Length: 266
Figure (cartoon, rainbow, N blue to C red):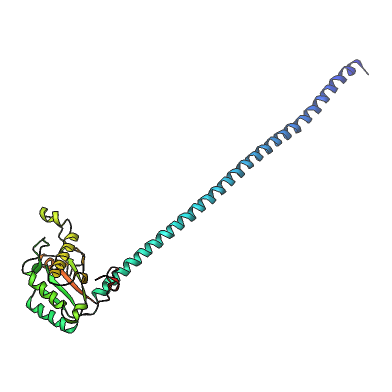
């Protein structure tokens, strides 16, 4: 072997060793990178799993809360339905009382018909037994003090109700107003609203009938303010018709607003 060849052999061996080392380094780096990526994916998977579990738990809490709210809403709706049913029953009871057939004996009805002829501003319906007193015959505008001319009429009314079979019947006195709000200061001081005026007038009639001899335990009062007009409140004439006091004659066993005559004390 020549001197030149002997010198090239070590160089070749060094180059060969370096080439083998480089080839071994590339797979190791790829493996480490793959391992690092797998670890990162594993951590991300754990984080997502934790977030999923938290979201599932939150969904369960919201579902429970929604169930509680639905239960509360159902309870509230049931209470509302019960209240509406009670109101409807009371309204139906009042309507049935208003629309009932005349409980008066024929003798009393005849006397009331005669009374209506004597006092043109007093009306009597022989079908229902309802008596209507025009506001003009009973009160001055905005007042609950009975006119002097109303006393004879109410006295005769009480006398009829205290005679014969009519003695066993009861009455409901109902006050009505027109749609004009209380405006005058002195009137408003005594009757702040039409509710006050309608009930105060009904009270005045009941007290007058009591003085005329009708037992107070046979009477009841109510006020409808402006909300039960006979006709539309379009002018003074129609408003005059709506200002009135009505008296409903009730059968002995009639129940009004929970009052049972069978259990009341005389």
